[in-house]
Image (cartoon, rainbow, N blue to C red; front, side):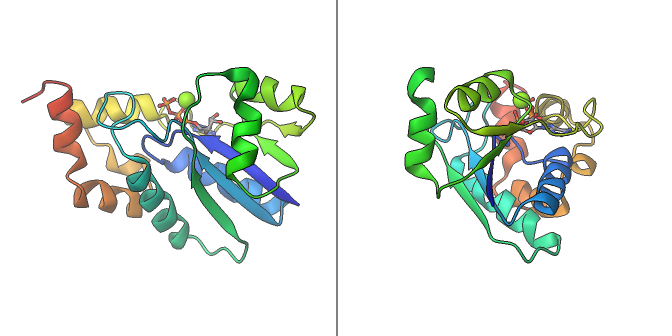
Length: 169
Ligand code: ATP
Ligand code: MG
């Protein structure tokens, strides 16, 4: 069985990493869809799709996985009624969707997919919005992301990017 997990991953954090590990215990292959792939250089979406691919791929190298994982960017189409078909046209066939997002849940359910909710891990800290706030405020953000993700963010000078966008210097 092949599963789909969608997020924006701005950035890919330890909550995502835990979910991925849990999903991999239940399925044979996993597709990680990177939503809002066209977005970058904004406060909500500081990192490009390519940078997010790099974060996820390297973070997955940190954990031992024998199963196939496909990391695929998905551009927004701004039309919810057609979104599931759009996703299906961009990724390998899948049978089950993992999400806690109510809209994603509803859209895949209506399209006839099996949809499963995931556990939340330390959501107060493992949360993209909160981690981006810490990056801007100069607080410790590294402990909330896989080591490999912190390395990618430093490599691309991500902190000065997000601080500059926020008008912090
Ligand atoms: P943002 O605050 O930017 O929305 P986020 O942490 O919610 O970031 P997303 O990329 O929006 O991350 O989430 C993608 C998926 O990951 C969603 O299905 C979401 O429920 C799940 N997720 C996010 N954080 C956690 C967490 N701490 N534990 C488990 N699942 C999580
Ligand atoms: Mg979210």
